[in-house]
Length: 187
Image 1 (cartoon, rainbow, N blue to C red):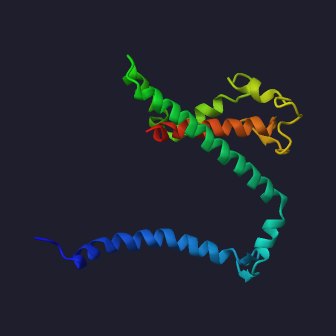
Image 2 (cartoon, rainbow, N blue to C red; image 1 turned 120 degrees about the horizontal axis):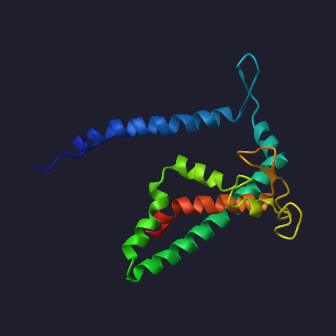
Image 3 (cartoon, rainbow, N blue to C red; image 1 turned 90 degrees about the vertical axis):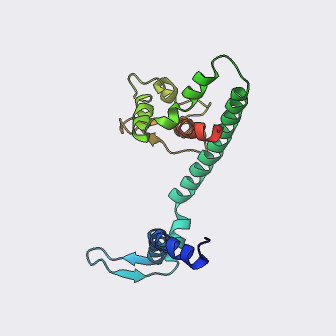
């Protein structure tokens, strides 16, 4: 007995409505807010048109964040894809300890994000972190304060009074993010 098309639509419709409401409402509300300015104290929204977008495009912080995001994106994709491809090719060959290697490969995926974040933060503690000498060298890339395109300094999450050169900090974030997703990409 074949179910009718309307019965299938009826069964799917409640889920579709809930997902659409959860997804669509925040997007539409954010779009509506992007054309308004909030008055402090009153909570009223005043229509300002494209003024918010003009201020955003003129902001130096926005252009710097676009550059940092672009560098992160390119570094993350290149590192993750190249390492994952290399690991996949190595695992394709049947060697003696392949099951052990596969288990070790899935370790980043199994570890919770919170625990992984804490462990990665421990690596950069200035006094005893494994990567602290790497971050403490301000002329690591031959220029003071890292690569010249990244002129702002980054603060340590554990020690905000100690600035890190931005290029090594960005590289550290790329490596940590790639490590976490590597098992999935290797598959």
